[in-house]
Length: 187
Image (cartoon, rainbow, N blue to C red):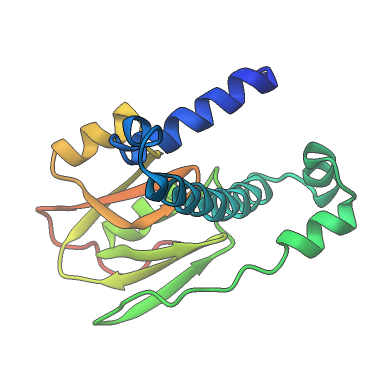
């Protein structure tokens, strides 16, 4: 995707301005509005850094090499790996029997989660190439959608429960199925 720089800047500026709909009219007369704009822009900067780290992790989980990531971002393989290679794991809340499914990729994670879901396990958290799952007394279905997409909104309207916050570009959902879990564990 090749969006011209000016258009890209306009889109970002409009998104920041939408965070506080009053800021545009206050900029002409309120010095405090300029400070508030600086705060909003700084928060945007910090959030885009988190989104970039998540997007790189997503690219790696989809099979991209550090060479490809570095090339896409205009840096060397080594620089990309040094900057994005260390993602701290965040513990997920778990109140019962828990497991961590590892080695998951963008291409197999939903199939794996649904296989475990048939045996009564549901995701309670996730990170780069893993999901933490918790055992329950019912089967579960899992889905993912691109953040902010129509599919994500539709899943929420249909009662799917959001898991955690997001892992850019994905947000994950689950719902219980009114069936007892299959015995054993997935093969």
